[in-house]
Length: 92
Image (cartoon, rainbow, N blue to C red; front, top):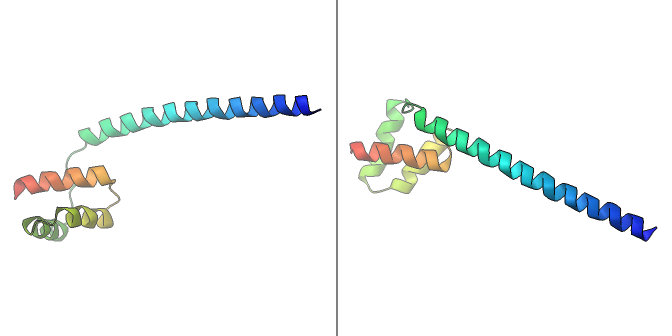
């Protein structure tokens, strides 16, 4: 009886490992596609009030606060918010 349970347990472990690998591969493919689509998107138009606030933060050297603020206003990921702030910073 214990041998059967050990075999079942081993099969379950193998199944979960294979599922995990498959999910990781799918996630990697999705992340690559999203990154490609993000590069193709035009610069997101934000309200001038927010851009003004971000520009003020950048002039004060508060890059991190600017990234945090744009993430509060939008649902941008950290890397996308950083890229946006870097593009905005180039305008300063």
